[in-house]
Image 1 (tube, rainbow, N blue to C red):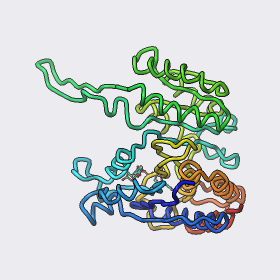
Image 2: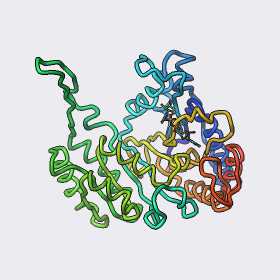
Image 3: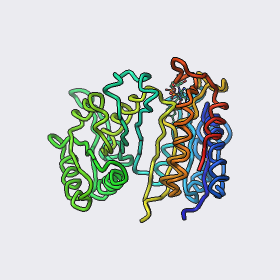
Length: 364
Ligand code: NAD
């Protein structure tokens, strides 16, 4: 059994508001399943800049390293928005990823049948959509060297380098194969193998690894085609795995399928143990929503679903994770909606009430 130490980093804006609601449901899990989570709370992001002059204190990273998981709210806001500033709130999340070796970003995309009309896509296109998009997080063109700009007699020049090692590619593909194995057993590997050498190597390694996963169907698609198919036939995907830059774009595209950011959880994972668990950072994909902060309007469901991912992927608590997810489904089915997902014939509720309703429905 993994340690039950959980670091809470609520952050700024609506971060603390949605975190509080997730904790209500986690308290129900503790009571129902006889667990005792050991929480530690750290200030990060803009709040930490105000208090300590840095977005992520070394003490916070040390606390994260000795925890099984980090439950992260969101960081940032107009007060700290100067992109030229030396200390910026987002350094908290980047520092956590680097410090904890989180190399895989996971975003499940599932459309609740009752919310299918909220999307900008036609219901018949979206029907049955239930996929996970996995993005490599610590390699590729974001970190490859050389990366620089210079001026020549014929004008400005710049270079970025897309670089991958076999180890980096194998470990992210492994996350993809393992996840596909636990789901509908289909893995779509996205690359640009008709142009890029990194992609040709990626495709080659994926094909080699497929021999160890005979139960998983592997398909390769070029990233341009993937961008198209995501909105044309989203329900045909099960698990998608891709490198950093392609993943950055495709995860945001996929995130828009359900129509609301307030429903979308995410996980960033590091090294896995044999049982599949390991350190992870779990956060809603939305930001700090300064426009609705402090108004009891924020949708806490993405944060609650992030907590469910934490139970599953860092604590190895599959039944507990499902209990949380079922409670969220039940609240949606009962017609309760925060303003961002308000629909016809729904019952409007605020952040706190939504948190209470989910917690009440958490059952074993
Ligand atoms: P945002 O996600 O905060 O908000 C975009 C829109 O979605 C807003 O209208 C907001 O009210 C709404 N929204 C977001 N989450 C919601 C929720 N749970 N319930 C209901 N409505 C919700 O994005 P933004 O406005 O571009 O950024 C605001 C701040 O958040 C910026 O400082 C940005 O840097 C930061 N940010 C942080 C993270 C993170 O911490 N991981 C991610 C994205 C943005």
